Amino acid sequence: METGPLHVVTGAFGFTGHFITRRLLSMGRRVRTLTRRIDRPNPFGDRVSVVPYRFDDPDELTRSLRGAAVLHNTYWVRFPHGRVTFAEAIANTRILIRACETAGVGRIVHLSVTGASEDSPLPYFRGKGILERAIRESKLSYAILRPALIYGPGDILVNNIAWFLRHLPAFAIPGDGGYRLQCADVEDVAEIAVSASERPEHLVVDVVGPETYTFDGLVRLIAGAVHSRAKIVHLAPGVARVLLSLVGRLVGDVVLTPDEVAGLMSGLLVSSGAPLGRGRLPDWLLEHGPTLGRTYASELGRHYSRA
Ligand SMILES: NC(=O)c1ccc[n+]([C@@H]2O[C@H](COP(=O)([O-])OP(=O)(O)OC[C@H]3O[C@@H](n4cnc5c(N)ncnc54)[C@H](OP(=O)(O)O)[C@@H]3O)[C@@H](O)[C@H]2O)c1
Image (cartoon, rainbow, N blue to C red):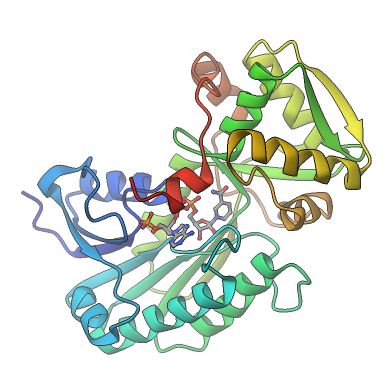
């Protein structure tokens, strides 16, 4: 039974939150998670206590944070859908920050993104920039981590690139594919989050691995790892966006939004800082290539289904 300091992780049954939780448990920390998925099977059993997000009841939310040394915050939405909006995600995160202040949480480790900026024309990056400021201006001790594309078991984007490469005869790249991006191994993100939780000073750092790829290069790397025979073609961005939306209908998901394509093409997933992550994507692909992309990972299925 863990007896160490209490860490609260938002989304321990999600992607990054799962790996942060695993690492915390391996270090003997007590973990509580805030999630909507209170009825889903808990892969950590009774080692992680499960409490619903109560953005609608700040007092209850504050109670769920009392006694916590750290909040690891992964909560965010990838894109607006149905009644879920970026404005709501910003408002909820502000409520969470205030609840941490009231509960006396010792430190917040907040997952942001490379290229976060209040001035961004893209709502995802603008929302992240707005929340970075809210955290900087709060009373909390903070570490703001800004990962680029995160890959690892259970990720959506790298997995689905592999799925398309395995299952379709062609893979369409918007534009020339020469725009650059960096990735971060989810194990590195978790390790950096946990070690940032133990530092005393305010911290704002990008979290990327040692390599920079062009998007074209990344897709070809993944194609090699899954022995894809798909033809890789380049399409005008407007045509690629229409195709993405059609393919999305086919798989019943939002594959990549026009804003995500714009963010990718404008190089927002690149850091100007030194890489903190050590994991190399080719090494990871060597191990995980045989299973990568065998099953489609649905963003809508994961976050919007009631099952
Ligand atoms: N994945 C990447 O490549 C990447 C890259 C850069 C930055 N980031 C940032 O890193 C953090 C973690 O990303 P992740 O991919 O690991 O996220 P995730 O596990 O899919 O979700 C993280 C948390 O957000 C909640 N959430 C997600 N979508 C939601 C929705 N539509 N409505 C309500 N709640 C929702 C989840 O709630 P439940 O617990 O109820 O499921 C979970 O608690 C995020 O802040 C993300 O912006 C991720």
